[in-house]
Amino acid sequence: MKPQRRNAGIRYINPEIPDFDVPTVKGERYEDRVPDTLDLAERAALLVHVMTESADLENNAEIYWRANFGWKPPTMYHDMNDWCEYKYYAPSLLLRQACGADNNLEVEWHRMANLCQMQGPDGLFYIPLSNRPWATDTGGDASLNEANGQVGHILGTSMLGRMIQTTGIYYLLTGDSRWFEIGKRAVDGVNNVLIDNGEYAYTTKLVFAPGETAQETEERLPPRSTAGSIWLGSGLLGFYRQTGYEPALEIARKIARFYQLGHGGFIGPNGELLHSHGTQSFAPDQYVHFHTNTLLRVFLLEAGLVLDDDELIELARLGYEDGKKHGETLMGYFAENYHPVTGAACNSCEFCEVAEMIYLAFRMGTAGVADTMDDADRWLRNMWAEGQITDTGWVEEFSAQHGIPTDKPYSTADRVAERYNGSVGGWIHPSDWQGVPELSAEACCIGNASIALYKIWRDMIQYDAETQRLKVHLLMNRASPWADVSSHVPYKGLVEVTMKADCEIALRMPEWTTTETCTCTINGNAVSAKPEGRYLVLTAEKGDKVDLQFPIAEREETLSFAGTSDEDGSAIQNEYKVVVRGSEIVDIDPPGERHPIFQRPHYREDETRWKTVERFVPDSIVETY
Image 1: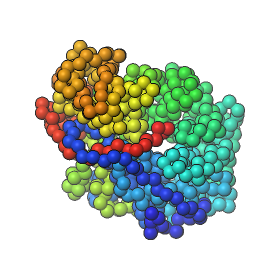
Image 2: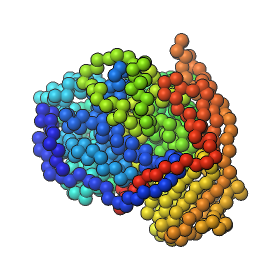
Image 3: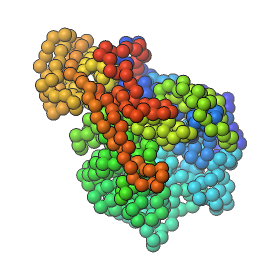
Image 4: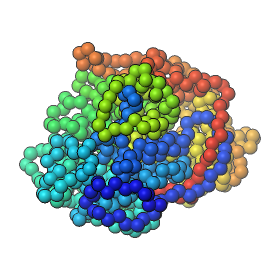
């Protein structure tokens, strides 16, 4: 399905595009009537939409990395941060396994072609700058454009990890060994941009030129210089999990060891979050960038689980617990930056850290590291559900009435609101998706959210073939080969499971109920379920209808959010009154002014609202991601 359009003016380091097949998802599709409640497959389809619709087909499907609904007209534009699109390459395909989406496959072809053409003679991937004038501001390293006699290509260490991991996903999805070979060559070339002292390894810069190598210095490099190691290590670990290529694991282990030994500047004395990826010194009294820190904890957790290293796992857990101290843990709101000394925090929430905190809670819960599944459930139902926009019908009117006129280079106003539907917010306030008047959404957050959502959707139901047990961790709508789950929460305390196989089923109870208040029926007949911790376990057969029922009630709470005074920059606390039904915030006061969120009066009805959907069950699922 080779597209007709390809911009030959963008000069890649490798001119050749091999023949390859774009992977498509196969599975069972069927219409079903389900409760109108949170459905992660629907959210996956929305993310596939924005990740592919925001592509610029005149420039080889490069994304417009940011959309501003508060401009007049709503606008999305290119700049150097378009390189965040490499976070899209794997999850835009993987999320199709959740929802069955087959739209915009032309975009996926371009992405696969781009990856092939970016691989240089040393095996590493180089981003082209020619005929991409918006990309020439390379974060203070613009001189690299002509370094070593090679014009117009750069290597971004943070994006290199995403690219390597993507080759492993392409290999798993297509079965084509060329993608393994492409990834293997990149792994073998990584040491060119690393300092490896035998015990640990790290990269020294965010951007390298072709042929440039990392140079060791006697001085301790600040977090700004070594932060790319986090993304790189994570990608290498992913490639190992996908392919079993041991050298990738060894380098990832050494990068994890770099942070484990206290280098890099992102782990405090007690495992707490520390510093920013832009920090130039190790002074402790600086703002903490939440997302860089949670990304590191995800890497350390995954590395610890693969390497069976309890210390790495504990560092991840400690960071997660510290992160909770600096957020609002009913809603799942975590400010983009906060000051560890003064207590001041950014007045908006970047979705990157929301997604990573949810994933940390979910992954630690499924791995048995800590009892954190309730955190994941609560934050998915609140900050995720409201932070991902599902309807942009309000945008044009908002822009016309309040928008700031702009004339941004390298931009488009073509169907921006519709194309960016499904995005997650980049500047969310506790009660307002459009937390900042003009700024709306960006690819960094969308990419990180997509990576997390695939894994959560995949593992929210887990089947153990050996024990023939199906564990349902999240009581949300979900289709699967073993059972279909239909959740009435929060309309009422009812979850219906239609069995597709004979097996044991373990259902996790909500945090706001107990085993004594839950009842189970099979085909309308009361049964006794065995409690195992937070799970109720019973045996069912194919065709059975299993119901789990429990009381649900509303309550009122006051939530407090750290912020910063607009007048003098001092720390402040912003308070909101909320109505909570089960775990879900259904009303908040004061409400948002631009695009209010947490205004969900329909959830306060006692009768369930229904919707007709196409459910999709894929033939196969990528497990090693």
